[in-house]
Amino acid sequence: MKKPSKRLRIRKSVSSRFEVTKNGVVLRESSFHRHLRRTKSKKQLRRLKGKQPVLGRFALKVKRMLGFR
Image: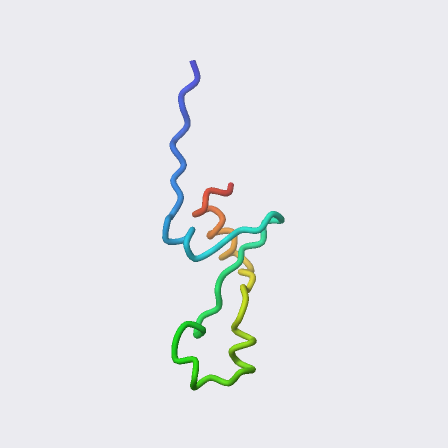
């Protein structure tokens, strides 16, 4: 009889902040876009809009915390 594998747990804090696309790219929201927006220029707000890709070793760490092996 095969021993059951250890239960995989995901980090809820990471799952609310990052998302993984179908191709495996990790995306994050940009910072400085939530409040105090009147003092920022429209150019800066356009640049901060949308999701940014996470690069390098940090993307691998985020994937592992989300349950991707």
